[in-house]
Length: 123
Image (cartoon, rainbow, N blue to C red):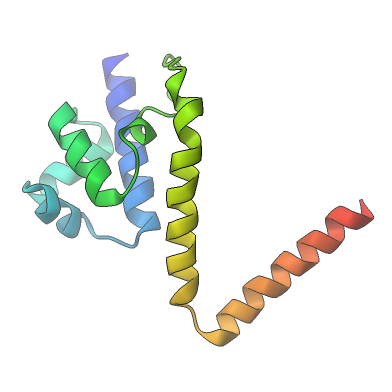
């Protein structure tokens, strides 16, 4: 189970890092470890201490619970309560990302959303 959990944490870390467009080096510098250590975290080779989880959550702008979310044997009731907070962070991330796109990219995304909306209406 420990190996599965380390692997789960690593996948969550990698997914968030890539979503933010960060390198392993950048994340490593932020929490004062080597990029090799981030590699080991992401592969699940090394476990992540509670202090490092807090540092990573802070730097990656997610709740600490983000790392535990979706783990099969975790049944924390507080996750549902805090999902709305995480959703707000995701919207903030998306808004920032959208703001950095070119006008053409923004128009393309808006067109896809409009098309999706039309599909929902027609069934």
